[in-house]
Amino acid sequence: MKIAITAETDNGLDSQVAQHFGHAPFFVLVDVEQGAIQAALSIANPFAENHEPGQIPDFIKQQQAEVMLSGGMGGRAIQFFTQAGVKTATGASGTVRQALENYLGGTLTSAAPCDESVAHGHGHDHG
Image (tube, rainbow, N blue to C red; front, top):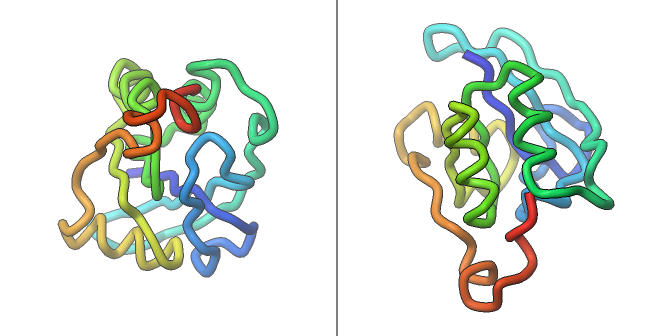
């Protein structure tokens, strides 16, 4: 299984989780087999500065990720991932490794739109 996690830096598993999905500078792609990390690769988010709705979920799907973890994500992004067959979970924090361990351990399990996105209709709603 390949899991993508938003990241502030390109330090792989030691990167801090990016809290804003759409503007995450990097994604860490982690290959996991039987609960064990096999490989991790940091890639730059080509849409961090500017993107249209759906571009980032499409990009993550092209990387063959089955799961997307992030600190926060808007409702539209969650919908795009669902349509692409990619599971999402929000509320990730700490390092990428910690977020991954939380997901694999069952404490990071679902996605909900960010309060900012829901309350104000901005911020995370795009892509």
